[in-house]
Amino acid sequence: MSDGEPGLYSEMDIEGPDRPEPDPNPPGGDPPGTGTGAGTPGAPDDEEMPLTEHIEEMVRRLGVVVLAMAVVAGVAFPFADRLITFLWFSFLPGVASQCPPPAGATASSCPRVYHPLSLMIARLKVSTLAGFIVALPVFVYQTYLFMRPGLYPRERKYYLAAVPTSLILAGVGVAFAFFLVLPAIFTYFLYYSESAAIIAFGLSETFNLMVMMLGLFAFIFQIPLFVMLAIMMGITTRRWLEARRLYFWGGFLTIAFFFSPDPTGMAPILVASTMVVLFEGTLGLLRWTGTDARTAAVDQVAALRPLLYTIVAAVAYIVSPAPMPTGYFGQLPPAVTDGLAYLGLTSATPIIVGLAIIGVFEGINRLVRRVTRDYRVRRVLARTRVPVWLGAVVVGYLASPDPGLLRRVDVTYLSTTETAIAVGAVVVLYEGGLVLWRWQRGR
Image 1 (cartoon, helix red, strand yellow):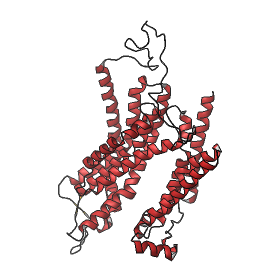
Image 2 (tube, rainbow, N blue to C red; image 1 turned 30 degrees about the horizontal axis):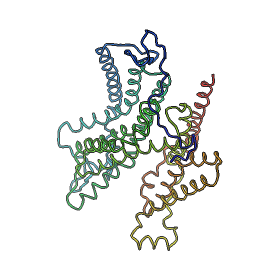
Image 3 (cartoon, rainbow, N blue to C red; image 1 turned 135 degrees about the vertical axis):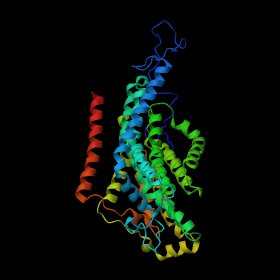
């Protein structure tokens, strides 16, 4: 994708970590390339420690993570029944007031308890899930404290920035599983089983799937953070990861099928697909923004501005009272809809529309790069690629004959004023943080 333009599609490939050059005359008398240190200075606070002390410190850090997880789980435990009811009837038909069903009636979505401890175990699971989500950034921070003596100041900044990012990504992962993955799985289950048997959902088995999917997606949405952190710290390079992508894909498939309790294979496929998309999307985003381990950290964060604002605008629109669109498949010209129906491609309309938009944009992008050498125009096109691709996905989905997801997300959590305040706060924090960061660098 590189067109010879420095900074626009620049490669992120470096030979090793972005660390200080070795001292040609190291103290101690060892010439470069010899001795125990090979002439390379250590991190500012790095010092030799016995292996036993390293193990003790690691166990102590893990103990802090487990303690934080236990505290949050203890706080959430009194509200476990409400959380169980909320999660259960978010994905299964019916309401809690219908359970247990009156005599002679059936309510297949009511939970069945086949073990005396099933309800208690379900309470522990949902409270532990809350503790696990909150403990993720604690885990990142504790690993930072464990590795801090061996890190350079630049690397410490990256690691500290990863702590709040970890919590945000965990929340996004839980929301992704809640609004998309679990509804798709249970819709598939009902469709797969209702014509063959009377459906009854056991509390332990069904709730185990819910909790496992929510926790698993909170974890796998950390993939972009781990990839970017490793590249920005100079531990690895994008080219190295791309050259071994099949190994990562195989690892993702293994994790998905090992941790997804679904014999039909529906859940593992969704999990593995999500992991692959996150991994490849992160590498693609880094290539598009032209960031690498040698780019200043503030510039790397600033390069994410189009993606951040696109996501913030989409989330704000969903949680606000603004009416959701109903789709425009019915407004398409009859020649188009009839042609798609004749070819049997009606259900593929969203894909066709989305690919058409992306194709037009990329065609214009390539044409402009060939016609003009104006670097500013090229930069604008490069910066708008991610929002255009995301917009193509949305516009394509609106062309679906039955956009059921729009009805699913048609909820109102904030008023118009509250939404505006929340968006303004995100913009002020982001832009103000960049200004302060650049000011500090200038000093």
